[in-house]
Amino acid sequence: MSEKSLRPAWGSFLRNALLVAVLLVMVYAAFNLRLPSVDTLQSRIEAYGWAGWIVFVLLYAVVAMTPIPVTIMAISGGFIFGVLEGSLLSVIGVLIGCWAAYHLARSLGAHAVRRLLGSHAETVETRLQNAGFEAVFALRLTPGVPYWPVNYGGGAFGVTQRDFVVASVIATVPGQVSLVSLGAFIAEPSVMHGAVVGAAWIVVVGMTIWAYRSWRGTARPLPGA
Image (cartoon, rainbow, N blue to C red; front, top):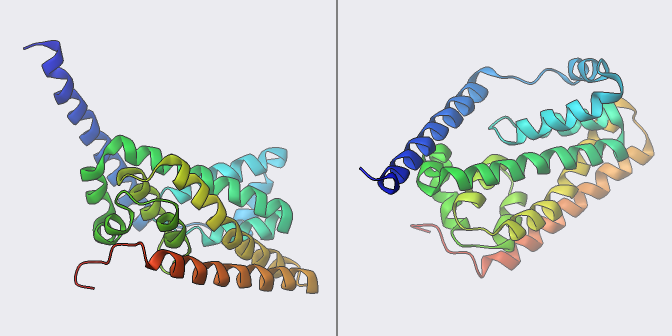
């Protein structure tokens, strides 16, 4: 058997092995991992001293790659670091996780990602198949759609890296700021923090409506819709 004929077999084996590893991590994270309370997370982050922000960003990136909701991380960011620093670190962390999952999905391939997404597969593939900025942007802002299916679907179903990154940045920032400011308000209730929470949520709602209306004319309908 020639070396060339062995390459596809080895490529398929490695891809399947990677899929199994990712699936095991996902299942374990979904059923066994629970993020600690905000107070506990704060004490653990602060124990790292000046390196606490690095630990926070890396932890956030890992969370963004799994089915674990990112909400607690964003709220913790505001609680621990305040609005400005917390928003910056939260946005950096979640975008690193989104980008890493996007590239992991490109390595796995569409077939493997369909298995990985489970019940989300049909909706995500239909919306993202060879789609662009508008599709990623709208899904990022759609209530009830977690981050991780969009991350893996974007990488597997033909969304360019440029469209994925730009849409993720623009759609993610207001939502992260709204959650971070909520955490800051919990830690230190004030008129300023309350105003930031209100303004951020107004922006999120406005962007969601705009995204839905602008995308509705170009998105392919779901089967049976």
